[in-house]
Amino acid sequence: MDLRTVLVVGTGLIGTSAALALRKRGVRVLLADRDQGAARLARELGAGEEWEASGHERADLAIIAVPPAHVATELLALQRHDAARFYTDVASVKAEPLHRAAQLGCDLATYVASHPLAGREKSGPGAARNDLFLGRPWALCPTDEAEPEARAAVLRLIELCGANPVEVSATDHDRAVAVVSHAPHVAASAVAARLADATDVALGLAGQGVRDVTRIAGSDPSLWLGILSGNASPVAEVLEAVATDLADAASALRALADGDGTATSEITQLLKRGVVGHDRIPGKHGGPASSYAVVQVVIGDRPGQLARLFQVCDEVGVNVEDVRLEHAPGLPLGIAELFVQPDAAATLTEALHQRGWQVP
Image (cartoon, rainbow, N blue to C red):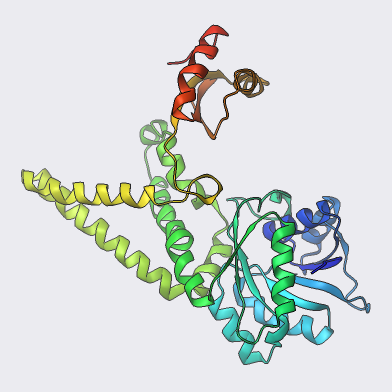
C-alpha cells in the first residue's frame, strides 16, 4: 500500500523519529501534539508540517505516539474526526489499550496496534533520529476485526522506517516485552538506585560494567511509570522470578561468608544460567549471537581519534562489528574496544602497531 500522507500524533522520541524516517523516504508528514513546544521543535528538525485539526485533509495513516493510557481515547477522537484511513499506535503495551479501545467503541477494522522495539535513554523530539528503527524488530498486533488494508498500511510504515515486522498477538507481545524490556528496566533502576547513596570512593571506582548495567535507568521516570502500569502483571511475574534468584543468591553468599563452602554451587548455577540466557540474545541482523574477538586500543580524548582508528580498519579491510569506549577517570584517554571476526583480530592488531597505536 502506498503511504503519501501520514499524521503523527505525539512528537516525542518515537513519533518524531518515525516522522523523520518517513520524510527521508519522501512521505508527507503532518504533526500534532498538545505540547506546542515539542511540536514546534519537531517541525524545526524537519519532521513535518503542522496538522490543521479544523481542516478536512485525510491522511493515509495516523500514528498515535502517546503513552499507553491515552492511546484509546486518542484513537477514538481521531476516528471521530475522520483524520485518516487507517490507524496504528507505537506504545510499548498492547493488550490494555486494545481492550480499552474496544470498550470505547473504536473502529477496530481500521486500527492495527504496533510497537517498534527501539529507543534511547533520552526522550523528546531533540533525541529523535531518522535511523532509530533501522534493522530493529517492529511488532504488529492485528485483531480479527482488522481489515487487510489496515495491516498492509502498517507493514508499509514498518518498511519505510527500515524495521523488521514481527506479527504477534497483543497478549504474547506484552509478556515478551516484560521479559526483554520492562523488567530489565526496573532491574537496572534498582541497581542504579544503590548508587544514589554510594560513597565517592565507590563512584570513583565505577567502570564500564556498572555503566552497561545502569544505562537505561537514566530514562524519564514518568514515561516508564505509564509503561509499567499498563503491563503490570507480566512485569510483576518476571520481577518476582528475578527477586527469587537474587534472594537465593544472597542467602548463598551469607552462608559462604559464614564458612559454608557448599554454597558456591548455587551461585555458580545462577551465573551459568545467566551465560546461557545471554548467549540466546539474537546477534547482528537478528541471527544467532556471534563470538567476536576484541581488539583493545588506547585512544586519546581528542578530536578525530576515532576517525583515524576506523581509517586503519578500512585500510586493512577489517569490518568492525561493534565498538565500546571506556574512559580512564582523571586521564585524557581511554580504551576503545573493537569487536571483529576472530580471524581478523591479528591482522588489525598488527596494522595498528605499525601505525603507532598502543594495543595492550
